[in-house]
Length: 317
Image (tube, rainbow, N blue to C red; front, side, top):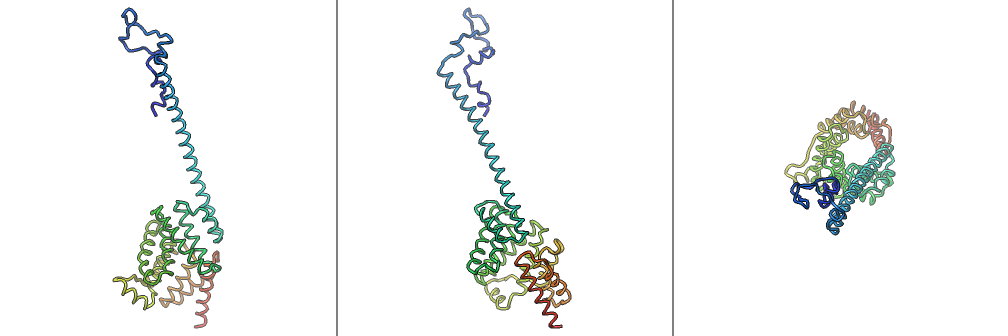
């Protein structure tokens, strides 16, 4: 680069003298005296072939440097445009998610399924899973979407292991796949699921959904049927286990971080209190779940379940 920036340094000494520079002491005149070297045209040119080659090399070096600068600037502009594009897509995706536009969100994000951006990939995993849970989705389509979601979540985690959301959605998707792979795989995956939920909470202790999901993990193993417990003991020396008290602690912690953030957290608070035989607090949380504004298909299902459980209270009373 230094050569390209100073093309004159490649020229013969005579050319330097032509710019007003003096040759080193000891260069003699016709009488052997030390005098400034006054050059004629032939001396300036010296060997014309050498001069032309040097000049050509200097010009090419300079042009190469200029080309490098142009290409570098173009690459930077392209990279900046790409980042801007991803940010724009993520903003659109978050808007559609908040609006409950599940299918539109999936259609938007699948256009970028080859992306290497972890933030986009975990959102795509979430979108695939949400479409799988729509009432109109067939069982065959649901299975395809569940496995597709896992692939997107896995790629997101590979791209950025420091993303709490990638850990969270990877764990969720592994759990979903377990429904198709039998009880042995489901129990074996439980350890992996717990590990990733705990990592998500560690990376972002203010994410209420990660905390809520740890509560679900605890609730699931607290109410594990006896036959599954027996299988777990046969398959594993120390099978996963938990209690309703542990689950309740996570559900309350999630509410403290972000009150009323999720209808299912309200429902599970009510159901956990039912398991612990506290009907008063169960009714309180189930009523909140029933009255929660329905933004998604899941919210509607939760409203229905909460209402049915509350009706069961009334019938028994």
